[in-house]
Image (cartoon, rainbow, N blue to C red; front, side, top):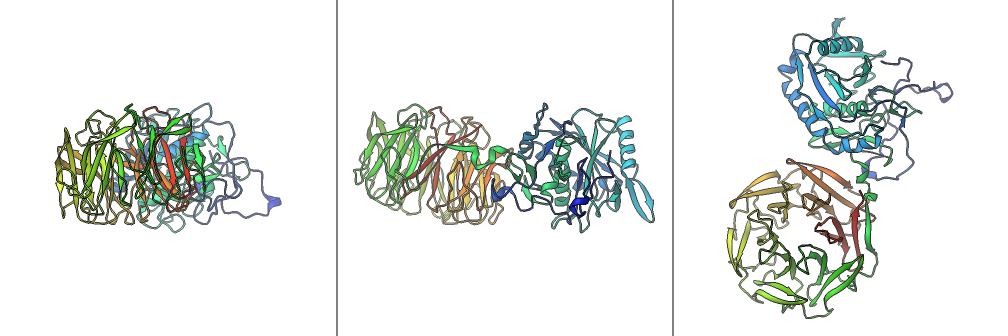
Length: 640
């Protein structure tokens, strides 16, 4: 129960007269409360300043797999506020399996803290909380405990287990009192326990200046709920994790410091391990990645390739037909320069090299500054062991086969040429990438598009004859509702549904918050995710900079490129997003501005990245970042 002798959250007693702190705060303080970690958030990065707080384990229990029971007390929750109740249920469904729960794992004891779940919510309409005192309906903590015990005893709400946590939501115009304080005055919510392990939180309808946030009222409810949820998990009996010097629990230290999570407003929580307010686990620290290879800035490049030109480009390639993207191809458009490097335990050596200047590769001269290249599965083998090269604006496209280091053309057009499969490649804006159109698990189709015109084609290869399975323009109407009318539009293949197949197309428009992900059903493309234009980006990443770049990545070493990496060169900003049934959540985020990743600062506007199979394991789970013109290249491994 409540210790009425604990210090008020807004008290400012002189230091000599402060009482010894013997219990945690257990409330959500109002806006007048100044948290110890104000301003020290994940955006400012770990190690900034001195850690202002530290939670200590006082030996009590934690909730390992919390089972939340939402209880909406009062008739209005079934009437005018029923939509709010539905939103709160959706919030619990999201947050209980989110990165916020992953972050709490650092406070595990003998009980490991993991993801939780929501029980069916209960709406109590046959009674109203408390009694009317001086014209105001007021409910005491003792009355809430009595009501909760009755509901449990009568089977109206689920019975108590070691992980059960009851959330009691009060209706409008009801004042809550607890421990000599009242809602909207001393607190915005609180948590407590009775009868041993009956754990509960109380969330008043705090539409008052001391508690309410700007925007829709659901923001206030989810922010206060997130505060009490994390405190109830890490300190359910008021004798586990709290700061002995202040009485602060995990939420108090970061009170009212908010971020968006899964489309809801939540409060950040204190991480002892990271020394910041965050909703992300320790694995999100820049130190969660470490370099397996690093050079610069400035550096000497990699494997003899100096990376000293601003024109340098790089991509992963399956050189030896192993089915593994474990070689790095580097090229310098306009000079005939191309190298392919093999990795032997961190030592890179050239298996192919030309220039600078050089003669290109397989007859393709690489003499235009516009030349671009990518890996491609030409023969439907499931191996990205061919190189496609093209020259936008000229109709030029070649596809090369490798035979023990000798590259020969299996397809060639130009310069000038007629493009490929009816796509003329006559615009300098043309872009191309490999794509799994037919869900075969093979990147054996070529997608070509022309930003700003609505033009997109997808080509199938039949023994060297390419034909369109999808074509629009130019001009055209884009694809799947995405109009491709901006010159800034970009696209890439993505494994949206964790199938191991790169059979969705992600399209984005830097600077506008616009991002769409399209599913293909026999040539009919439809959006499984869409934002904008303008939009709010994806998973908290706002996509509001023209510099934004995105790509698919195998973050968890599953062999599936089912995460999206987004980064903003020049700012230290990089996010990695996980897809949970169409809801994207960050598993890593830095900035803007940020500190980059794994020691690579991402402070140059020239920075570029690609996924790479460093260990030859058949997984593109290393992040390669490079800085043309400086000799800088790093290859990062995620630390597990």
